[in-house]
Length: 440
Image (cartoon, rainbow, N blue to C red; front, side, top):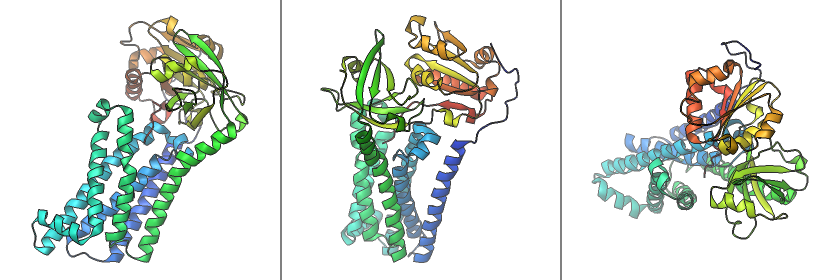
């Protein structure tokens, strides 16, 4: 096996696009926090400190709501650098921060006015609700946030069907409408002309980006490319490849390793949308996806008919060579997670080692294609214990520190590989893993 026998990682040959995107996000958030702080200062002091802190918490909550829209807008610039996994993680933690900011806003405002009016806290809630229309709307919004936040906790997510969770999550849009109205009716900090202009621009931008990424761009692309099923290939008894054709596919900005959210407009399938990664690099003529028939949607792919119209959202994902920092690579696939790995082989220019984990070598779909494209392909079958320990990986790939590592497969395998990469001290910027998850 050709290797670079050097424990020390080679100098990176490409810029760190992830760090650039993170810095851009933090800079945008920082600038807006400073603007919010300036608005609080310009507005002047409140009757007491608790009310002042409550106003700040409310503005921060509004800012975090706008950030949530940005994170789920599926903006290509962010997605291609950070990937949906990271954006989904940021979205989740921003959501919990938003819930705490709203809790602080409600508690501080009520306690502050209770102190100012010499009322008990419960009485003050009714006084504020009766006095200010916007406060009643804020209470409804807060209760909805609690419902959405509670159902987004890991325990609840495991128990709720995705469709139920997603339907509850759509309450976010009602929350935004109620909160925005509350801030304009009752908010003293944005009562000035400058404050209102800033808040309208902030939310106009956030909503505009969301509509562009989630609605307008997919509609325009599907109208332009007119995707249809071109052919079905049965790779094994339970794995099928679907070839998609269309118009002007050479102009579609898709890369090997990315995925689309596919909706096949056939009877019994049109209402389901599923993420499948490309299993071959786009060639301007066809797009290919390969899926295992394990769920209802995946199994139905075997019954698709040539000519079926396809509605696709994407491409999405940062699991591409655009984020590769070294020319050489280690690609680790597990089961049907081999599909983006197979596609990446067409774009990686340096020396490649592929580790392909399957229960039995007979389950190794696309294996002939892997062997035709990669100089080294090792199939790891049998019991999985110990196959992805630091010692095993160092033995199989002695120069792992001088390679980018791409891993895609079941969660347990992916987590084991990532843990070993950390223990081996492979720089994080050289490790790429994506579960093709979607926020919102």
